[in-house]
Amino acid sequence: MQHNEESIKNLAKDIKEIRKKGFKTQELFAQHIGMNYNKYARFEKTGQIALEGFLEILQGLGKLEDFFALFGEKNLFVETKPVVVTQKKEVAVPVKSDNDEIKRVVTLFDHERKKLQSNYVRREYKNFDGEYLLRLHLKESKRTPQMFFDAIRWLFSNNPKAAFHRQYIMNIGKLIEHFNALEHQAMYSEEAVAFNDEAKAWYNVYKKQGLPEAEILQILKDGGYIQ
Image 1 (cartoon, rainbow, N blue to C red):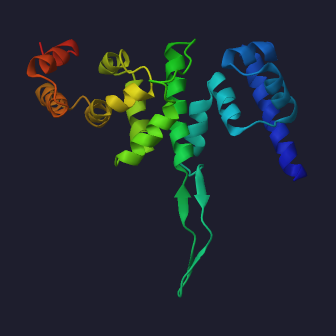
Image 2: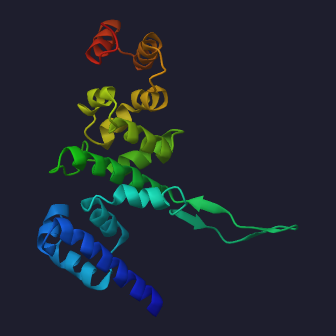
Image 3: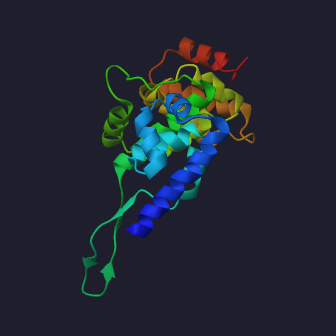
């Protein structure tokens, strides 16, 4: 236990050194990430903080993507059920926590928005929290958090067409509404895709949504898909 406490304090010291390169005082950094000053000061001193607060700190330091790159694909958010005893052997069954995966999606969205808009603060959508909306949507559909994670990566990529979508996808609710279009782009946005085939695929997406012909053509024209 003592070893764990020392490791946590050392981690807090490392983060303190990173923080000092961009923010001379704890108070300035706490304001930057919207965290209570005493809460952040206590973290640097003791290393004690909830996971959500720790992620906010990493996000404020621009280190959140590095965190996910190191651990996101290594089953960080994995719980293990008790060993299932069978007649032949014992099997440990890993189960991903949906809540943690949903938080990961929402955190990534917030992080990318702040890159473009430093004063961005997550707002509720029609009086519903983003995590609640995403959880409800995933329960009612066959989609997964990873699908949204991939779509967000494309949405905030350097692809010129992504900027077209960022104009109206300002929160998780809008992300859910326009997921079909984003999923298509995330999967088929490579340069090798022929222009005409791409425009046709977009047409089919909007047609399934029940949009009128004239409106679909105008959307494609605004997006630069057709002249």
